[in-house]
Length: 326
Image (cartoon, rainbow, N blue to C red; front, top):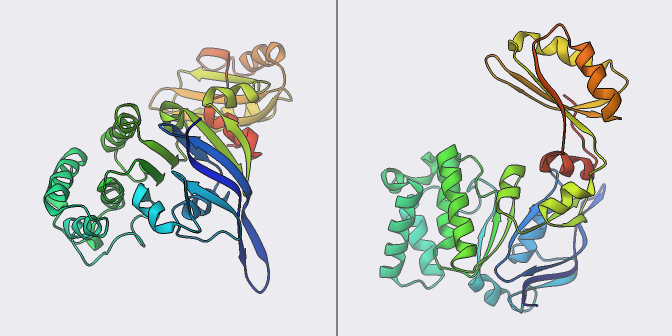
């Protein structure tokens, strides 16, 4: 098996006078060449710290990692040549704010030894694809979050690396731009045979894009597998979805009534539109819960009450021990 990203017992500890925090705790992971791999976890779980060590921005306290066979500790220059990286910091530390977007890209292309004519062709093609033409000569300090995210993505791609390590690559993008970026990334894996490791909080995005995924919590990997395997791992979650044709003004009363039912363990989510309400609840038993919920809400205009599989997001939150409660 050809593994292009390999880490063994990779560890990072942040120390202060008062305490020490183990941000990444002996993570061992192998990612195959040509794989689209998702890294998920709650805020503060260690995702960004782990990826920063892989791209040589942070030095691990223990362990080692190899990118395309090159050590992050002994051969960092070779690692940087092969990786396109994008950190989820809205450009604060990854771009020069007093330069224009175009000058930023030309500067970073030069650092990667991309010939000037090649850099110009790639930049022009990517700014057109991402819709940055009219803003590319503005100073980055005047960019929105979404514009900076697009610029950082172009920066990561400009030297045509075989490996991409991306932290929240669709953060702050409008719906159309986010869709375009997802299409581009999937094409880079499927057609150009690139390897992508990315972090995201968008569970639908992860399910749509990823071949495999890992869930990190408190610096440790608590799950490794496919999105389908994650849902199967929490198959014992009993979820009921309630759809009502009602005005959103009654939502609070409905939630209160559901929370008073012993068979309801928690409110997982709610979606409200002008005349529709969809509520997903965690229950102890389908056969008791469905008739009890239907009876309790009989005064409302119920469209359906049915058992459902947990969504990827619900499975992730269950596994991480952070089930939501509305």
